[in-house]
Image (cartoon, rainbow over all chains, first blue to last red; front, side, top):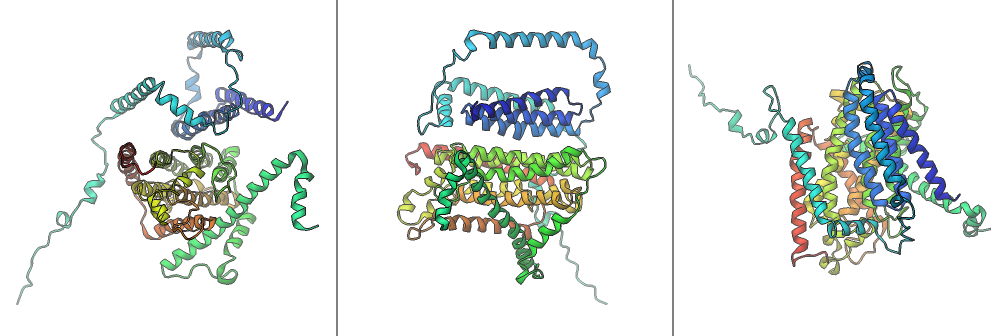
Length: 200
Length: 351
């Protein structure tokens, strides 16, 4: 077993264990932190596959941004586990069916001959000066430019939709308009009254 | 046996593990000077702010007070670490470790001079962004694990602030990437070495800060916000939430946050120098390029950090959010478009 294989098994063990802890941890904050660890280990495995761009982007986007906001929300929620456990048995059949279907789909894809190591030949040692990021960028903006643009438009629609759906003008909002505050002139706030001193 | 022979015999002595030992030595060679810089940055900060406020600053320990940071460090090491009874024990210690570790990990891709870099990777800028965005976990975890309202408020504020300013920072860097066409930090510095002004011997004017002036300012200000320094230090606003996420920490655990914050400050200064001020390049043609230039530029930006702290009052929280989202992000988008059009036009200066 060479060094690389050792690293792979090390990362894979952490990945599997932390993924298990995500669904078994009782504390939701701990579960979210284990998910962070899982993402990080997955990034390490991608790095081993010489997909350094994807690995770093995984860490940057999921660990650095998505999970931060996730934790933000989970930490502020008062999660009542007793209430969550209610109705476990009534939801079980539906949940089990969905889980089973997902497992079946994954098995079909992963066990198929088109997903084995034979169907995806080793790209071989990269030539000197090969730049993963550049190649990816070239593909995205030439061969796959329409799907790429389409995906970005869908994301934009989702962002705007989320804002529009949740934005409610509040009457009790005490938000201050910084522009108005900065734009204030002396005459708006202060009135100089000429009061000649009285003479006896 | 002379010292040279001794060093030459080292690889043979360690045999196959020599690359590992050599890398560890290089890491130590970065971390030890960095910690020394952090120590004296705190000293320098107290001195500079003292002078600005017509005080003397620390002057008791050692000549001119020069041993003050050593004494401070010793004090922090010897102090007891108190763990709050209801704190989440494991995470309480993971917090400071993460804050410090990520601050150090980012230094792996920083080039100090031509060829002097621990890992000269292709995606250096991305690695740097990833590492700085992980740094926030130290704050969030410690704020939550301390089981204190003040800590938690600090953590929440920090999370919101860092996520907001990371976007502006990222956009500013996208402009740098566009003009240098590389994610490699060494190549970004090389890209600034050529141009009309550089050929005239005025390298100073061919660096990125001039064509990307708004981005330079956005990056610098976002860097200050990202390191939670004044005037953006609502995370540890004393008058409101005491010391934010660090409230419950004492001794070395507190010192870890402190070391992390100051090494992040140095990192942001070095990064600004590399991205916008030409890294180790000499500003004028008749002087050679060297590490001294990078150090000088970084020191200047560090001085700006201290200067701002002594000058500006703290931002109100909604003003911070407004600056990040409503001023910087639109400005970055406009400049991104402008740079794109400029590069496509015949006036392109980055060929």
